Length: 121
Image (cartoon, rainbow, N blue to C red):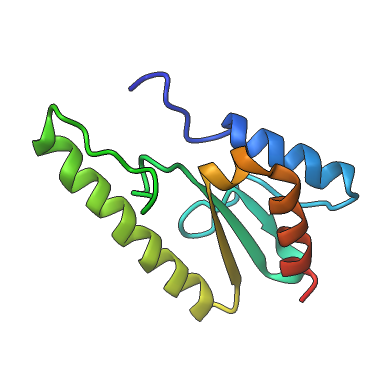
């Protein structure tokens, strides 16, 4: 567990690097509810990059075989919190978009293009 990062994951660094190369400027590690991975404050838009395991991806999630007492409620709470955060941010006037880890791994450039389109809407 100690090797699991909550900030500056490989996925985040990759997307942030590509966004920066495209000329977009953003904030990270803000005090917003839910701790979005990327924040475009001037556009009131936030981006979350969700791990397939910790956020229970419908395509790639594999339930752990051990320590179910810990993992089942943890994963359930993560998914519930994601919904709560999205609702709270939208209520505050923020636009919210989420991407799965597998989407970033498959085609990071496509994710970046979606983010650019989303921010400029």
